[in-house]
Figure 1: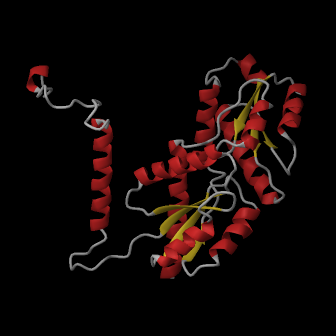
Figure 2: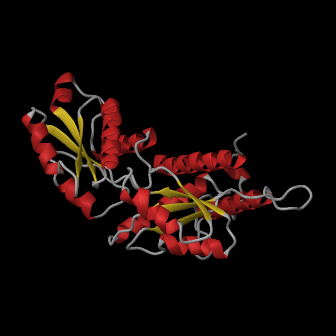
Figure 3: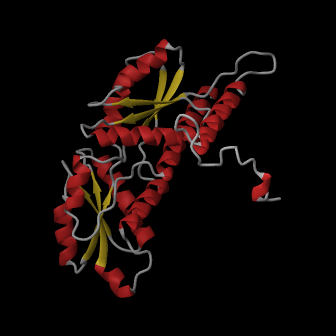
Length: 298
């Protein structure tokens, strides 16, 4: 039953109203809810006889690193979303280069705390040198048992994020046949010399094209070809005059900015902290952790 206004204590703070010290009731309730959830998760690790059950492997999200401060802020916020979705899971951050903490330092800290296992989830969107060589070599320097998960792409959850970012930028979800024949998308990615990276990016472009119903051409900011301006010119020559650039970058930075500037129509924002990205990180973690468990059982 809904209470009438007279049933409330007028002296009590209402939801969203300031509390002493500038806090708000909503934010305080959120903090208390997180504390309660984390406490329940810790208690679930204790069996009825008082012995501690083994906890899940730690999740270490491995970001590339960037000189742009917006990238680190974005990654940290994304990790907070992951923690909100899975409060019982220890979530850590490590970088390949440029930002702290480096992956080696994060893993050394886990080793010092007695963590036995960790799953490393690359915050990268395709296979390449970092996934195949850099991350495994950095992980090999510590005693913690590690397993490197697959990169985030290609995957339908990645396509969900790309689609939503395009819609936010002004992509029309309903088009006439004439508009559809004139529209196309350039999927702007970082680029790599590894051929598997191009395979993954083409697969992501194919999945996005199926979702949008228009051609999606992969293009690259560096190393690989075609570049974004070259892809735009090729589509224009084919009569596609409404060309959007879909930013296939995890966070803002130089490459994302340069690719967006080449858009003749609209450009989407980087993938960022979209909820589907947080769920994709957990999906990669779960698949890798399950594979490790099956291997140990065998």
